[in-house]
Length: 148
Image (cartoon, rainbow, N blue to C red; front, side):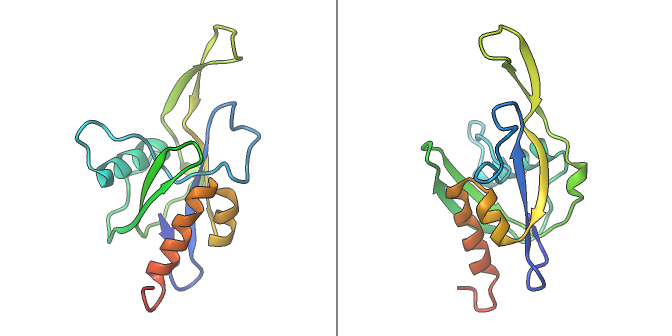
């Protein structure tokens, strides 16, 4: 999601939840994302994951396709952008369960996303997973007056 196109662009980014990410910041943030269900179109996956990870429905509006990137892990992420607004302080994510502390046998629940924030493109490039920073460049290109 983005806001302020042409007047101070900001993008919404999400910080992964759970103890493995708790102390990580630069390079750890992400766009809301997840795995598609069987037969699910990428845009439908993006809308579902936005809702699940942020606790708000994905905004309606003109969709900008940002393409794919391959993260260092090998995971391929497809992203879309849409103009909208929400109060990042109201984000509430779905949860996942994992053994914590490691090898303790004790299962705990953690949010998939523990917080979200609006930031400038320059800040987003630093905070996002390095491969996903390319999405910011693509978004700026699509929003530029000449569309390049």
